[in-house]
Length: 456
Ligand SMILES: Cc1ncc(COP(=O)(O)O)c(C=O)c1O
Image 1 (cartoon, rainbow, N blue to C red):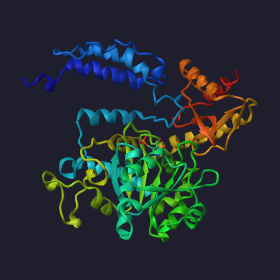
Image 2: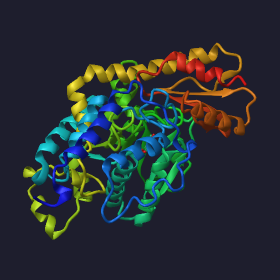
Image 3: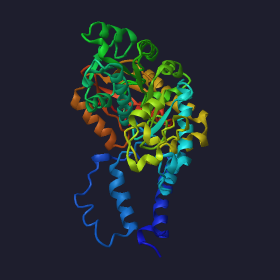
Image 4: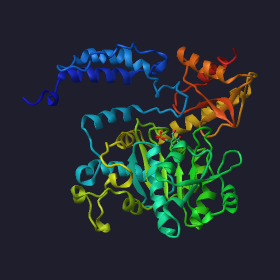
Protein backbone atom coordinates (compact mmCIF):
# COMPACT_ATOMS: atom_id res chain seq x y z
CA UNK A 1 0.00 0.00 0.00
CA UNK A 2 1.52 3.32 -1.12
CA UNK A 3 1.08 6.81 0.17
CA UNK A 4 -2.57 7.61 0.75
CA UNK A 5 -2.53 10.58 -1.62
CA UNK A 6 -1.46 8.30 -4.47
CA UNK A 7 -3.75 5.38 -3.79
CA UNK A 8 -6.93 4.98 -5.83
CA UNK A 9 -9.88 5.95 -3.69
CA UNK A 10 -13.14 4.63 -5.04
CA UNK A 11 -15.30 6.80 -2.80
CA UNK A 12 -13.47 9.97 -3.74
CA UNK A 13 -13.59 9.09 -7.44
CA UNK A 14 -17.30 8.27 -7.33
CA UNK A 15 -18.16 11.50 -5.57
CA UNK A 16 -16.21 13.64 -8.03
CA UNK A 17 -17.25 11.76 -11.17
CA UNK A 18 -20.88 11.84 -10.07
CA UNK A 19 -20.68 15.61 -9.65
CA UNK A 20 -19.11 15.94 -13.10
CA UNK A 21 -21.80 13.73 -14.64
CA UNK A 22 -24.51 15.82 -13.01
CA UNK A 23 -22.98 19.07 -14.19
CA UNK A 24 -22.43 17.80 -17.74
CA UNK A 25 -26.03 16.65 -18.02
CA UNK A 26 -27.56 20.02 -17.05
CA UNK A 27 -29.34 21.53 -20.01
CA UNK A 28 -28.84 24.41 -19.82
CA UNK A 29 -26.44 24.96 -16.96
CA UNK A 30 -27.79 27.40 -14.34
CA UNK A 31 -26.53 30.94 -14.87
CA UNK A 32 -25.62 31.36 -11.17
CA UNK A 33 -24.72 34.55 -9.40
CA UNK A 34 -20.99 35.29 -9.17
CA UNK A 35 -20.29 37.79 -6.43
CA UNK A 36 -23.96 38.84 -6.24
CA UNK A 37 -24.42 35.80 -4.02
CA UNK A 38 -22.33 36.39 -0.93
CA UNK A 39 -20.19 33.59 0.48
CA UNK A 40 -20.54 33.42 4.29
CA UNK A 41 -17.33 34.76 5.78
CA UNK A 42 -16.69 31.60 7.79
CA UNK A 43 -17.63 29.16 5.00
CA UNK A 44 -14.11 27.79 4.58
CA UNK A 45 -13.01 28.02 8.20
CA UNK A 46 -11.09 25.04 9.51
CA UNK A 47 -10.96 23.18 6.20
CA UNK A 48 -7.17 22.98 6.03
CA UNK A 49 -6.25 20.66 8.87
CA UNK A 50 -3.70 17.93 9.59
CA UNK A 51 -5.97 14.94 9.04
CA UNK A 52 -7.84 16.29 5.98
CA UNK A 53 -11.62 16.46 5.46
CA UNK A 54 -14.27 14.10 4.17
CA UNK A 55 -14.37 14.65 0.37
CA UNK A 56 -18.16 14.21 0.34
CA UNK A 57 -18.56 17.15 2.66
CA UNK A 58 -16.06 19.32 0.82
CA UNK A 59 -17.76 18.64 -2.48
CA UNK A 60 -21.13 19.49 -0.95
CA UNK A 61 -19.65 22.77 0.23
CA UNK A 62 -18.29 23.43 -3.24
CA UNK A 63 -21.65 22.61 -4.83
CA UNK A 64 -23.83 24.58 -2.42
CA UNK A 65 -21.65 27.52 -1.46
CA UNK A 66 -18.83 28.10 -3.93
CA UNK A 67 -20.16 27.01 -7.35
CA UNK A 68 -23.27 29.25 -7.25
CA UNK A 69 -20.96 32.21 -6.69
CA UNK A 70 -19.45 31.67 -10.14
CA UNK A 71 -21.41 32.92 -13.15
CA UNK A 72 -21.49 29.98 -15.58
CA UNK A 73 -19.49 31.17 -18.54
CA UNK A 74 -20.96 28.28 -20.55
CA UNK A 75 -24.57 29.40 -20.02
CA UNK A 76 -26.48 30.55 -23.15
CA UNK A 77 -27.37 33.56 -21.02
CA UNK A 78 -23.74 34.64 -20.55
CA UNK A 79 -23.48 37.53 -22.99
CA UNK A 80 -20.89 39.66 -21.18
CA UNK A 81 -17.21 40.28 -21.92
CA UNK A 82 -16.24 37.35 -24.19
CA UNK A 83 -18.10 34.22 -23.13
CA UNK A 84 -16.72 30.71 -23.36
CA UNK A 85 -18.96 27.76 -24.06
CA UNK A 86 -16.98 24.51 -24.02
CA UNK A 87 -18.46 21.57 -25.90
CA UNK A 88 -19.37 18.47 -23.91
CA UNK A 89 -16.65 16.50 -25.60
CA UNK A 90 -13.98 19.12 -24.84
CA UNK A 91 -15.01 19.18 -21.17
CA UNK A 92 -14.83 15.42 -20.94
CA UNK A 93 -11.45 15.32 -22.58
CA UNK A 94 -10.23 18.01 -20.19
CA UNK A 95 -10.95 15.41 -17.51
CA UNK A 96 -8.81 12.93 -19.43
CA UNK A 97 -6.01 15.48 -19.58
CA UNK A 98 -6.39 16.08 -15.84
CA UNK A 99 -6.75 12.44 -14.81
CA UNK A 100 -3.74 11.47 -16.91
CA UNK A 101 -1.73 14.42 -15.59
CA UNK A 102 -0.81 15.05 -19.22
CA UNK A 103 2.33 17.06 -19.67
CA UNK A 104 2.76 18.85 -22.97
CA UNK A 105 6.17 20.39 -22.57
CA UNK A 106 8.51 18.59 -24.95
CA UNK A 107 8.70 16.02 -27.70
CA UNK A 108 10.87 13.77 -25.55
CA UNK A 109 8.31 13.63 -22.76
CA UNK A 110 5.06 13.98 -24.64
CA UNK A 111 5.24 13.27 -28.38
CA UNK A 112 1.76 11.76 -28.12
CA UNK A 113 0.38 15.10 -26.98
CA UNK A 114 2.47 17.11 -29.41
CA UNK A 115 1.34 15.32 -32.58
CA UNK A 116 -2.31 15.78 -31.67
CA UNK A 117 -1.92 19.43 -30.67
CA UNK A 118 0.04 20.08 -33.84
CA UNK A 119 -2.68 18.48 -35.93
CA UNK A 120 -5.12 21.03 -34.48
CA UNK A 121 -2.67 23.92 -34.99
CA UNK A 122 -1.99 22.89 -38.58
CA UNK A 123 -5.69 22.73 -39.27
CA UNK A 124 -6.20 26.24 -37.88
CA UNK A 125 -3.20 27.55 -39.83
CA UNK A 126 -4.52 26.04 -43.05
CA UNK A 127 -7.98 27.44 -42.44
CA UNK A 128 -6.40 30.85 -41.76
CA UNK A 129 -4.56 30.64 -45.09
CA UNK A 130 -1.11 30.59 -43.50
CA UNK A 131 1.55 28.70 -45.47
CA UNK A 132 2.61 25.12 -44.94
CA UNK A 133 5.25 24.89 -42.24
CA UNK A 134 3.45 27.39 -40.00
CA UNK A 135 3.21 26.23 -36.41
CA UNK A 136 3.56 27.09 -32.77
CA UNK A 137 1.95 26.01 -29.54
CA UNK A 138 -1.12 26.31 -27.38
CA UNK A 139 -0.53 28.85 -24.63
CA UNK A 140 -2.59 29.91 -21.64
CA UNK A 141 -4.52 32.70 -23.32
CA UNK A 142 -4.56 35.56 -25.75
CA UNK A 143 -2.49 37.75 -23.46
CA UNK A 144 0.36 35.24 -23.41
CA UNK A 145 0.00 34.62 -27.15
CA UNK A 146 0.29 38.33 -27.87
CA UNK A 147 3.26 38.79 -25.53
CA UNK A 148 5.13 35.83 -27.02
CA UNK A 149 4.63 36.84 -30.63
CA UNK A 150 5.47 40.49 -30.01
CA UNK A 151 8.66 39.39 -28.27
CA UNK A 152 9.69 37.60 -31.46
CA UNK A 153 8.70 40.58 -33.61
CA UNK A 154 10.59 42.99 -31.36
CA UNK A 155 13.79 40.94 -31.39
CA UNK A 156 13.72 40.44 -35.16
CA UNK A 157 13.04 44.15 -35.56
CA UNK A 158 15.97 45.04 -33.33
CA UNK A 159 18.24 42.79 -35.37
CA UNK A 160 17.20 44.63 -38.55
CA UNK A 161 17.85 48.04 -36.95
CA UNK A 162 21.23 47.99 -35.20
CA UNK A 163 21.24 51.79 -35.44
CA UNK A 164 18.38 51.99 -32.91
CA UNK A 165 18.63 51.52 -29.16
CA UNK A 166 16.70 48.44 -28.04
CA UNK A 167 13.87 50.47 -26.50
CA UNK A 168 13.41 52.57 -29.64
CA UNK A 169 11.75 49.94 -31.85
CA UNK A 170 7.96 50.30 -31.97
CA UNK A 171 4.84 48.50 -33.09
CA UNK A 172 1.98 50.25 -34.85
CA UNK A 173 -1.25 49.51 -33.01
CA UNK A 174 -4.70 51.10 -32.86
CA UNK A 175 -6.62 52.42 -29.87
CA UNK A 176 -8.95 49.43 -30.29
CA UNK A 177 -6.14 46.88 -29.91
CA UNK A 178 -6.81 44.66 -26.92
CA UNK A 179 -5.47 45.85 -23.55
CA UNK A 180 -3.08 42.89 -23.53
CA UNK A 181 -1.19 44.45 -26.46
CA UNK A 182 -0.48 47.54 -24.39
CA UNK A 183 0.58 45.33 -21.51
CA UNK A 184 2.86 43.31 -23.79
CA UNK A 185 4.59 46.44 -25.07
CA UNK A 186 4.97 47.63 -21.48
CA UNK A 187 6.59 44.31 -20.49
CA UNK A 188 8.81 44.44 -23.56
CA UNK A 189 9.94 47.96 -22.70
CA UNK A 190 8.91 49.48 -26.03
CA UNK A 191 6.40 52.08 -27.18
CA UNK A 192 3.47 51.89 -29.58
CA UNK A 193 2.86 54.07 -32.58
CA UNK A 194 -0.79 54.66 -31.73
CA UNK A 195 -2.64 55.01 -35.03
CA UNK A 196 -5.86 57.04 -35.27
CA UNK A 197 -8.57 55.19 -37.16
CA UNK A 198 -11.88 55.96 -38.83
CA UNK A 199 -14.75 54.16 -37.16
CA UNK A 200 -12.34 52.13 -35.00
CA UNK A 201 -11.01 50.07 -37.92
CA UNK A 202 -7.25 49.98 -38.40
CA UNK A 203 -6.58 50.25 -42.14
CA UNK A 204 -3.62 50.53 -44.44
CA UNK A 205 -4.55 54.13 -45.18
CA UNK A 206 -4.61 55.01 -41.46
CA UNK A 207 -1.24 53.31 -40.97
CA UNK A 208 0.30 55.15 -43.91
CA UNK A 209 -1.05 58.48 -42.66
CA UNK A 210 0.35 57.88 -39.16
CA UNK A 211 3.76 56.91 -40.54
CA UNK A 212 3.81 59.93 -42.85
CA UNK A 213 3.25 62.20 -39.84
CA UNK A 214 5.70 60.44 -37.57
CA UNK A 215 9.15 61.81 -36.75
CA UNK A 216 10.81 58.40 -36.83
CA UNK A 217 8.79 56.00 -39.01
CA UNK A 218 11.71 53.62 -39.54
CA UNK A 219 11.58 52.68 -35.85
CA UNK A 220 8.26 50.92 -36.49
CA UNK A 221 9.20 47.25 -36.86
CA UNK A 222 5.78 45.66 -36.69
CA UNK A 223 2.05 46.09 -37.10
CA UNK A 224 -0.61 44.62 -34.82
CA UNK A 225 -4.03 44.05 -36.34
CA UNK A 226 -7.09 42.82 -34.52
CA UNK A 227 -9.33 40.29 -36.19
CA UNK A 228 -12.42 41.01 -34.15
CA UNK A 229 -12.06 43.79 -31.59
CA UNK A 230 -13.25 42.78 -28.16
CA UNK A 231 -15.56 45.72 -27.61
CA UNK A 232 -17.27 45.80 -31.00
CA UNK A 233 -16.20 42.80 -33.10
CA UNK A 234 -14.54 44.96 -35.77
CA UNK A 235 -12.13 43.23 -38.14
CA UNK A 236 -9.18 45.43 -39.06
CA UNK A 237 -8.01 45.77 -42.67
CA UNK A 238 -6.01 42.55 -42.59
CA UNK A 239 -5.34 42.59 -46.32
CA UNK A 240 -4.15 46.21 -46.41
CA UNK A 241 -2.11 46.08 -43.21
CA UNK A 242 -0.67 42.67 -44.06
CA UNK A 243 0.38 43.63 -47.57
CA UNK A 244 1.94 46.85 -46.23
CA UNK A 245 3.88 44.84 -43.65
CA UNK A 246 5.07 42.37 -46.32
CA UNK A 247 6.18 45.17 -48.65
CA UNK A 248 8.10 46.93 -45.86
CA UNK A 249 9.50 43.88 -44.08
CA UNK A 250 7.56 44.52 -40.85
CA UNK A 251 6.37 41.89 -38.40
CA UNK A 252 2.63 41.41 -38.91
CA UNK A 253 0.79 40.08 -35.88
CA UNK A 254 -2.93 39.34 -36.00
CA UNK A 255 -4.76 39.16 -32.69
CA UNK A 256 -7.75 36.96 -33.41
CA UNK A 257 -8.13 35.81 -29.81
CA UNK A 258 -11.88 36.32 -30.00
CA UNK A 259 -12.83 36.91 -33.64
CA UNK A 260 -10.32 34.65 -35.36
CA UNK A 261 -12.75 31.79 -34.84
CA UNK A 262 -14.94 33.33 -37.52
CA UNK A 263 -12.69 31.69 -40.13
CA UNK A 264 -15.19 28.88 -39.46
CA UNK A 265 -18.17 31.07 -40.41
CA UNK A 266 -19.40 30.88 -43.96
CA UNK A 267 -20.59 34.49 -43.96
CA UNK A 268 -17.47 35.95 -42.28
CA UNK A 269 -14.52 33.85 -43.45
CA UNK A 270 -13.94 36.02 -46.55
CA UNK A 271 -13.08 38.98 -44.28
CA UNK A 272 -10.04 37.10 -42.97
CA UNK A 273 -8.22 36.51 -46.25
CA UNK A 274 -5.45 38.94 -45.21
CA UNK A 275 -4.46 36.44 -42.52
CA UNK A 276 -2.33 34.82 -45.15
CA UNK A 277 0.17 37.65 -44.61
CA UNK A 278 0.48 37.08 -40.86
CA UNK A 279 3.85 36.40 -39.28
CA UNK A 280 1.96 35.40 -36.17
CA UNK A 281 -1.70 34.77 -35.48
CA UNK A 282 -3.53 33.91 -32.30
CA UNK A 283 -7.00 32.51 -31.78
CA UNK A 284 -8.35 31.33 -28.44
CA UNK A 285 -10.13 27.99 -28.48
CA UNK A 286 -11.26 29.02 -24.99
CA UNK A 287 -13.38 31.73 -26.54
CA UNK A 288 -15.32 31.08 -29.75
CA UNK A 289 -13.88 27.65 -30.55
CA UNK A 290 -15.72 26.12 -27.63
CA UNK A 291 -12.87 24.67 -25.57
CA UNK A 292 -12.42 25.00 -21.83
CA UNK A 293 -10.05 27.56 -20.34
CA UNK A 294 -7.17 27.93 -20.75
CA UNK A 295 -6.22 27.62 -24.38
CA UNK A 296 -4.86 29.98 -27.04
CA UNK A 297 -3.49 28.76 -30.37
CA UNK A 298 -0.34 30.72 -31.21
CA UNK A 299 0.83 30.16 -34.79
CA UNK A 300 3.95 31.54 -36.46
CA UNK A 301 4.62 31.70 -40.16
CA UNK A 302 8.26 30.90 -39.40
CA UNK A 303 8.31 28.81 -36.23
CA UNK A 304 12.07 28.31 -36.44
CA UNK A 305 12.69 32.05 -36.07
CA UNK A 306 10.34 32.12 -33.08
CA UNK A 307 11.94 29.26 -31.21
CA UNK A 308 15.43 30.64 -31.75
CA UNK A 309 14.28 33.64 -29.73
CA UNK A 310 12.01 32.01 -27.17
CA UNK A 311 13.37 28.53 -26.39
CA UNK A 312 14.74 28.41 -22.85
CA UNK A 313 18.32 27.24 -22.52
CA UNK A 314 19.65 25.37 -19.48
CA UNK A 315 22.03 22.49 -19.11
CA UNK A 316 19.34 20.21 -17.71
CA UNK A 317 17.24 20.96 -20.83
CA UNK A 318 20.02 20.26 -23.35
CA UNK A 319 18.66 16.77 -23.96
CA UNK A 320 15.53 18.38 -25.46
CA UNK A 321 17.42 20.49 -27.96
CA UNK A 322 19.45 19.44 -30.93
CA UNK A 323 21.63 21.87 -32.82
CA UNK A 324 20.51 20.30 -36.03
CA UNK A 325 17.55 22.28 -37.42
CA UNK A 326 16.86 19.59 -39.98
CA UNK A 327 16.06 17.15 -37.19
CA UNK A 328 14.24 19.49 -34.87
CA UNK A 329 11.81 17.66 -32.62
CA UNK A 330 8.85 19.87 -31.76
CA UNK A 331 8.84 21.19 -28.19
CA UNK A 332 5.75 23.33 -27.55
CA UNK A 333 7.70 24.93 -24.73
CA UNK A 334 10.05 26.50 -27.32
CA UNK A 335 7.45 28.76 -28.91
CA UNK A 336 6.25 31.00 -26.09
CA UNK A 337 7.16 32.45 -22.73
CA UNK A 338 6.55 29.29 -20.79
CA UNK A 339 8.23 25.97 -20.05
CA UNK A 340 6.13 23.39 -18.21
CA UNK A 341 2.68 23.22 -19.71
CA UNK A 342 -0.41 21.10 -19.52
CA UNK A 343 -1.70 19.59 -22.72
CA UNK A 344 -4.09 22.49 -23.09
CA UNK A 345 -4.68 22.00 -26.81
CA UNK A 346 -6.05 18.49 -26.43
CA UNK A 347 -9.61 19.25 -25.29
CA UNK A 348 -10.03 21.39 -28.44
CA UNK A 349 -8.36 18.73 -30.60
CA UNK A 350 -10.59 15.95 -29.23
CA UNK A 351 -13.73 18.00 -29.71
CA UNK A 352 -12.76 19.03 -33.25
CA UNK A 353 -12.02 15.49 -34.34
CA UNK A 354 -15.03 13.93 -32.62
CA UNK A 355 -17.73 16.40 -33.71
CA UNK A 356 -16.11 17.29 -37.04
CA UNK A 357 -15.51 20.61 -38.72
CA UNK A 358 -19.11 21.07 -39.91
CA UNK A 359 -20.32 21.19 -36.32
CA UNK A 360 -17.82 23.98 -35.63
CA UNK A 361 -18.89 25.86 -38.72
CA UNK A 362 -22.56 25.77 -37.74
CA UNK A 363 -21.91 26.66 -34.07
CA UNK A 364 -19.74 29.68 -34.98
CA UNK A 365 -22.25 30.78 -37.60
CA UNK A 366 -25.09 30.56 -35.06
CA UNK A 367 -23.54 33.38 -33.00
CA UNK A 368 -23.10 35.59 -36.07
CA UNK A 369 -26.70 34.92 -37.08
CA UNK A 370 -28.24 35.71 -33.72
CA UNK A 371 -26.24 38.96 -33.56
CA UNK A 372 -27.83 39.95 -36.88
CA UNK A 373 -31.29 38.99 -35.63
CA UNK A 374 -30.72 40.95 -32.40
CA UNK A 375 -29.93 43.96 -34.57
CA UNK A 376 -33.32 43.63 -36.26
CA UNK A 377 -35.14 43.15 -32.95
CA UNK A 378 -33.47 46.29 -31.51
CA UNK A 379 -34.36 48.31 -34.59
CA UNK A 380 -38.03 47.40 -34.04
CA UNK A 381 -38.19 48.78 -30.47
CA UNK A 382 -38.61 52.39 -29.45
CA UNK A 383 -36.76 52.46 -26.10
CA UNK A 384 -33.45 51.16 -27.47
CA UNK A 385 -31.36 51.93 -30.54
CA UNK A 386 -28.30 50.50 -32.23
CA UNK A 387 -25.00 52.24 -31.63
CA UNK A 388 -23.46 50.62 -34.71
CA UNK A 389 -24.25 47.62 -36.90
CA UNK A 390 -23.56 44.20 -35.41
CA UNK A 391 -20.06 42.99 -36.18
CA UNK A 392 -19.12 39.33 -35.89
CA UNK A 393 -21.14 38.35 -32.80
CA UNK A 394 -21.15 41.66 -30.91
CA UNK A 395 -24.05 44.12 -30.80
CA UNK A 396 -23.75 47.57 -29.20
CA UNK A 397 -26.93 49.47 -28.46
CA UNK A 398 -28.19 52.14 -26.12
CA UNK A 399 -31.20 52.42 -23.85
CA UNK A 400 -32.35 55.88 -24.76
CA UNK A 401 -32.08 58.26 -21.82
CA UNK A 402 -30.24 56.02 -19.37
CA UNK A 403 -27.43 57.10 -17.06
CA UNK A 404 -24.34 54.99 -16.26
CA UNK A 405 -25.88 54.03 -12.93
CA UNK A 406 -29.04 52.74 -14.59
CA UNK A 407 -27.01 50.41 -16.86
CA UNK A 408 -25.15 49.03 -13.85
CA UNK A 409 -28.32 48.56 -11.82
CA UNK A 410 -30.00 46.81 -14.78
CA UNK A 411 -27.01 44.52 -15.37
CA UNK A 412 -27.09 43.42 -11.72
CA UNK A 413 -30.87 43.01 -11.79
CA UNK A 414 -30.70 40.72 -14.84
CA UNK A 415 -28.16 38.53 -13.10
CA UNK A 416 -30.00 38.58 -9.78
CA UNK A 417 -33.17 37.48 -11.62
CA UNK A 418 -31.15 34.78 -13.41
CA UNK A 419 -32.22 36.05 -16.83
CA UNK A 420 -28.79 36.72 -18.33
CA UNK A 421 -25.36 38.17 -17.67
CA UNK A 422 -25.01 41.32 -19.77
CA UNK A 423 -22.57 44.07 -18.88
CA UNK A 424 -22.35 47.61 -20.22
CA UNK A 425 -19.34 49.04 -21.98
CA UNK A 426 -18.21 52.44 -23.19
CA UNK A 427 -18.44 53.54 -26.79
CA UNK A 428 -16.85 56.87 -27.70
CA UNK A 429 -17.19 57.96 -24.09
CA UNK A 430 -20.85 56.96 -23.72
CA UNK A 431 -22.01 54.05 -21.56
CA UNK A 432 -23.93 51.60 -23.77
CA UNK A 433 -25.20 48.03 -23.61
CA UNK A 434 -23.28 45.23 -25.26
CA UNK A 435 -24.37 41.73 -26.24
CA UNK A 436 -21.52 39.33 -27.00
CA UNK A 437 -23.01 36.17 -28.47
CA UNK A 438 -21.16 32.90 -28.53
CA UNK A 439 -23.28 29.98 -27.28
CA UNK A 440 -25.14 28.46 -30.23
CA UNK A 441 -28.22 27.83 -28.04
CA UNK A 442 -28.87 31.46 -27.08
CA UNK A 443 -32.41 32.22 -28.26
CA UNK A 444 -34.19 35.20 -29.78
CA UNK A 445 -36.66 34.97 -26.90
CA UNK A 446 -33.85 35.61 -24.44
CA UNK A 447 -32.73 38.62 -26.48
CA UNK A 448 -36.30 39.98 -26.40
CA UNK A 449 -36.53 39.40 -22.66
CA UNK A 450 -33.27 41.28 -22.11
CA UNK A 451 -34.45 44.19 -24.22
CA UNK A 452 -37.87 44.29 -22.57
CA UNK A 453 -36.19 44.38 -19.15
CA UNK A 454 -34.79 47.79 -20.16
CA UNK A 455 -38.17 49.48 -20.45
CA UNK A 456 -38.40 50.50 -16.77
C1 LIG B 1 -8.91 40.51 -29.08
C2 LIG B 1 -8.42 39.94 -27.79
N1 LIG B 1 -7.10 39.77 -27.60
C3 LIG B 1 -6.59 39.27 -26.47
C4 LIG B 1 -7.43 38.91 -25.44
C5 LIG B 1 -6.83 38.36 -24.17
O1 LIG B 1 -7.10 37.00 -24.10
P1 LIG B 1 -6.98 36.22 -22.70
O2 LIG B 1 -8.08 36.75 -21.85
O3 LIG B 1 -7.19 34.80 -23.11
O4 LIG B 1 -5.64 36.48 -22.16
C6 LIG B 1 -8.81 39.07 -25.57
C7 LIG B 1 -9.72 38.73 -24.46
O5 LIG B 1 -10.89 38.96 -24.50
C8 LIG B 1 -9.32 39.58 -26.78
O6 LIG B 1 -10.63 39.74 -26.97
